[in-house]
Length: 136
Image (cartoon, rainbow, N blue to C red; front, side, top):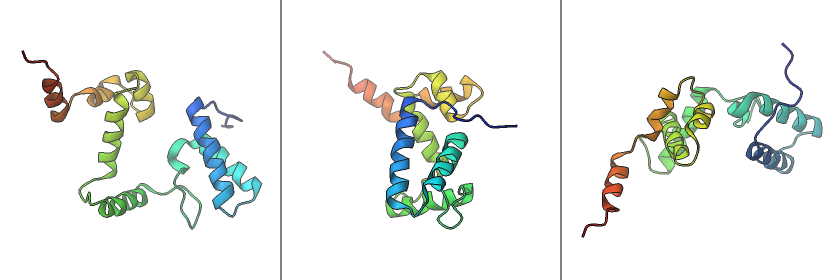
């Protein structure tokens, strides 16, 4: 199957890709053709190529991404955080400002029921809501 020449990205997606292109040009030793090809792959593959291997320039495996998350979590003194935890935190934070059907697309969910997990209040949210009540 032939891939689309220039798939549509949202305005923020286009902006992020332009910034990433500038970063590639400034920090990487790549030819202009390599930058174009790499950006095309990112455009077609979504985020999976935003974290390329320093050695192979291919997308990092899930295991490698997990290792990186754990490494920086340890540095930040958050030893119990996992990539899965970060995904949930991202979904929860996005649910504050993004319509549920859009969040489902972003998270790759087939069902809104799965995405509803992110709109449930946490214990801290519920405590904060109680504190905002004006007691007289």
